[in-house]
Length: 113
Length: 115
Image (cartoon, rainbow over all chains, first blue to last red; front, side, top):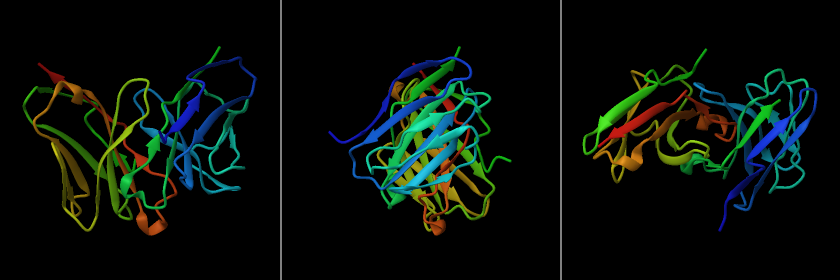
């Protein structure tokens, strides 16, 4: 079955450490996205990529980095510069026709301890 | 400044009745709107969408209405079922800008269907 997989589901990080969240899709989608969800907040865009080897900052990119070396993969690194990293992170992908919306992964909950 | 607003954090509706979820937007460049449904600890799932050339789109029990002059859209669920209990996000994009530069989401409305 085609889909989008995020791992791990839960992640704990010590303050000052970098951590990488994985996102893989086998839907042959060109575009991929990272969103962050905080309690009482909507989904806020961190980074997006429309094509391999290219990506753009979203609304809240500070303290995050991404890479897009393969069409299927769009990992997100939460760096120590991110002041408030505890959140629920969602990865999504889409075709160039947005009529059908995005396909989201099941999310990774990151907690800084 | 929020460009997509869902002013009701929660909504309680009796099973079998109509659920109406509202969404307002401020960016006049938005021309494509979607609704997503989200259960706890899961990713959102796409529900229904509408482009600005239409004022209504229907899919089974779900209908989305768009009022461009008021910059308002609403999602109607008829009849409401227990499985509809979830958080509903309204999202918007500008297809004129390619559409693949990310959706702008509202904060969500938690719909609770009561038996």
